[in-house]
Every structure is written in C-alpha cells, then in structure tokens.
Amino acid sequence: MSSDPAAVPSESTLGSRHELVRVLGLGMAITMVVGNTIGSGIFRKPGLIAMNSDSFPVIIVGWIIGGLVCLLGALCFAELAAMLPRAGGMYNYLKEAYGRPVAFLYGWSEFFFGTPASCGALSIVILETLAKVCGIESQLSEITLVVGSVLLIACVAFVNVRGAIWGGSVQGITTVIKAGSVGLIALLPLVLLMFGSSALRWEHFTSHFDPSAFDPAIATLTKAKFDALTVPKYSTLGAQMAAVLLAVMWAYNGWDGVAPVAAEVRDPNRNIPRALIVGVGILILVYVGANIAYNDAPQTVRSLRPRLDDNGRHGPFDRDRD
Image 1 (cartoon, rainbow, N blue to C red):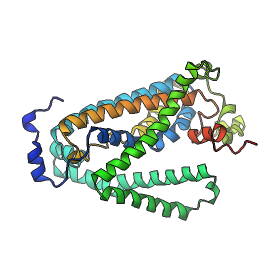
Image 2 (spheres, rainbow, N blue to C red):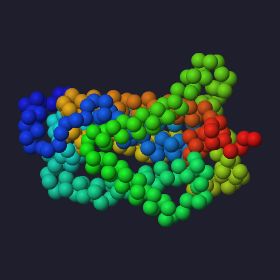
Image 3 (tube, rainbow, N blue to C red):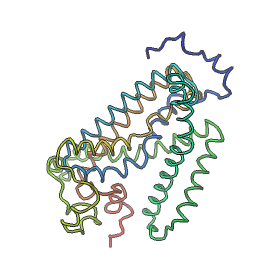
Image 4 (cartoon, rainbow, N blue to C red):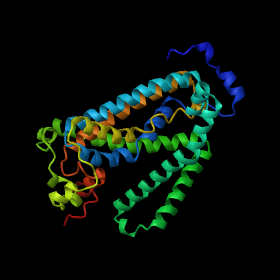
C-alpha cells in the first residue's frame, strides 16, 4: 500500500506497547475475512432476492456490484490497517479521524448492540438449520433455542479466550467447511457442462421464474395468495436492483473481520492488505458462482433455505424417497 513507512510503528515498538503476540499469518488472516463473512446471508438471502426480482441478470449484477463495493471498502481498510496495525479496527480509525468521543460511541454501540445482536441471530440460525436437517424442527421450543444459543456463544467465546492460535485454528476449520460447501455448489454448473449434462439449461438464466417451481410451501399457494405475500414486488429495474442490493450487502457483511485483530497478525503492513483483497475476491467468486447454481435450479431458487431443500430432494436427507 502507499502508506508512509515512517508513520507506521515498527514491530519492536508495537511489541513493547502491546501484550498481544503476532501469531496469525496470511492464511489465517484470509480465513478470518472469508469465515467472518460467510454465514446466514448466502444461505437465506437468495430466496428473498429472487422474490424481489425475477430477472437473472439483475440478481447476478447485484451480487457483483455488492462485491465490488466491498472490494473498495477493503482497499480503504487495507490502507488504514497498514497505517494503524493495532487491535480495535474501526475504533482506531474513528479515533484518529474524529477524536475519542466518536470512537467511544462506536465502541460501546458495538459492545451493547451490534455484536450481541449479530451473535444471537447467527446462533439461532445455526440451531434452526441443524433442527431442520435432523428433522426435529417441530420439537424446537423457544426456551431450547435461547439456551442452545447461549451455550453455543459460550463455546465460541471459550475458544477465543484460549488464545489467537486456538481461535485462528477453529476459524480455519469452519471457514473451509463453509466456503467449501458453497464453493462446491458454485462448481456444479461447470461440472455439468464438462460432462455434457442436459440438466443445465440456458432458459433457466434467461426466462422469468415460474411460481409453480418454487419451494413447496410457496408452490401450494394460489397466485392471488402468492401475490399477497409480504415480500414486496418491484416493477421497475431500479427498484428491483435496490431491493437486491439491500439483501446482498447483508450477505457480504463481515469482510472487515481481520481489522480488529491487526495487533495479532504477523507483518501487518503486508499481510492485512493482502488478506482483505484476496478474501473479498474469494467471496465475490464464491457468491456469484453459488447464485448461478441456485438460478439453474428453479425449484429451489426462491426457497428461504436453498441448500437444505436441495439436500432434501437430492441428497442424504431426502425423506420423500421410498
């Protein structure tokens, strides 16, 4: 990056002022960017996006634009993280730019609202997804959800309290699982093309979606009831793109995850910019590829749980088989 080397604290200076040990390499930093981003968004938003726009080009362009916006943000954060390779991320940047009061308000709003709400929502999504996969969704009570979410968050907190190496290792494993599963979905159209399968049809990407091919819960509705769903229908291209981008940006949320732990990254001036740029690039490729695969499956593209529905129809969880 173009930061002034003279303005960047040296490793020895940083080590004398901070107790944190720089143990995270480039690989772990990249997994933090990717793993911190891939969550409920890519698994739940494609269905809602398809409800807001029945145009495949609009959907894919929306995912590309969202990724490019995050890439621009990553370039900014790469410069800032290289200049201020300290723990805290956004807190440090706001303090340098606007002073301690603004940084203080940001830190406490994240502590009391942003992070707890995000952790709680994600833990609930994990438990609900596991319940659906195991077929015990109807037995999942509200109390079970709350207790399970608290225990799950406590387990993750314990891993991180153990140290950066523990946290980075677990982050790497979970990132490989999440990114690998979405990546395999993204590769399916290419595999079908290589083997000349007739399952890949061009009309899936050019024609409007047919409500009769939606998720079974939606397919059973009459057209009048479907049109009365609370999900808004947008007729203009601009409104559709705005609705798509609103959902897309949620799926990309978290790409800056390595910035708050900059004090634990080795050679931060070099590794943090690389991790941010490479990580966001991976996210764009995986997300766009996954949505191409989703849109080739009209029966699940509007599902609120596309991966589970695909597993239910074609995978080991197919309960409709004889």
